[in-house]
Image (cartoon, rainbow, N blue to C red):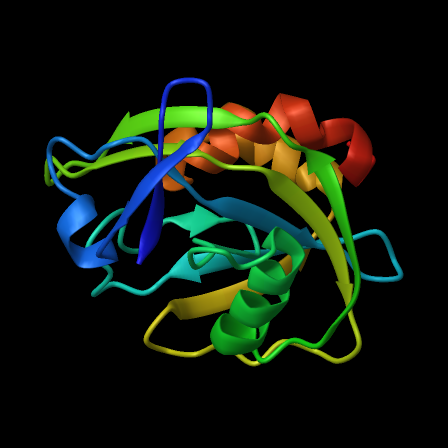
Length: 171
């Protein structure tokens, strides 16, 4: 289930995730998380090829949707564990107001208010192949260069949010 939102970001209901992501996706709540290591590198993941939207593109460490009534930090921790086997030791909100709308090549629309988090993990990631096909650690500057040179290879939410998060990443 995902939380549906009005234009001001207020919750107005819930709907099944599978039924929401269509060509006419209503505004809903999500989150994005960037995991950094002790060397200042950021973890980027490549979406599995069988994902319905943006298959095979590189993106933030992980993202997801909070369940109805689920505190956002708990949702971030839950999704980090599910997708990458991470136990997060720090979770910090770095942009509560990021919002984007993008249409995948298949015609499916993402339409989200998507707060962005920065986190650290207690152990290395182990990707769930249903979600992620590849992982790599990059410097924030390398990620910036990739955003600028090859935005088509990255998720639209990473490209559109990068300038908003660059300072927190040290880019």
